[in-house]
Length: 304
Image (cartoon, rainbow, N blue to C red; front, top):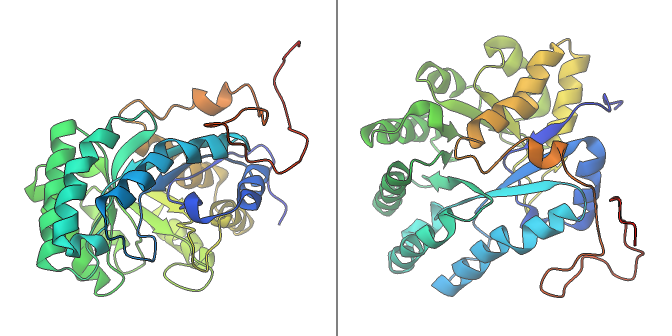
């Protein structure tokens, strides 16, 4: 694929904790200038609140450093994911922990929260976190269930409205052709996670944008520890351009809409990457480097 080298992309849903430095290098090369990493289920269920505390600390500490070493600005969303809401004894402790992290400098929303199996426990902790979002005036990133998706998506939006949240400040993620119209009609922001084989493919995404336009639509990769593609956003952008979608619509769905949606608390700013001094791989984080014997790449204007 021959991409327009001047285009910049934001991946607003990618789990870089599960990815390698090769992915960071490839994303930067493809034009990804910023990303948002939602707190997530790790595959192996956590059994102690300390596991969440260390994970959240990594999202606001180590991972932003690791991204910076490849020229990408890292933000995150913090929340108790729906699957782990079903361990209520642990969930109570995690919810109490959230305020300690929601004020950190790279936290742009509460997320990803919502329903998985749509159990009473998931409903309880989803509502508690929506109350927290309202109290702190924070953007919300909602995970919609993979099973019974349409009903779960509609229920997610109705609960958000019950809690008095502004739909324009709520990103409903993991949409497909079955849910997009309802989400847009209700004034919420519709995000789509592009996978190689499941959920939403990039060719189907092109047709969604052709049908519904680019307003309030966001494209992300959701790349994680499973079969997924951290280049899904730039690849879908390239396919949209080759398929005759206007560049303006590509920029909105792959960059501007995500910036507008997640910058409302002021922590995510375009100047963070437009005004960046460049990569300095001689830097350390708690005495740790991402390098393994390589010569550090340094882009800045150091004299000495």
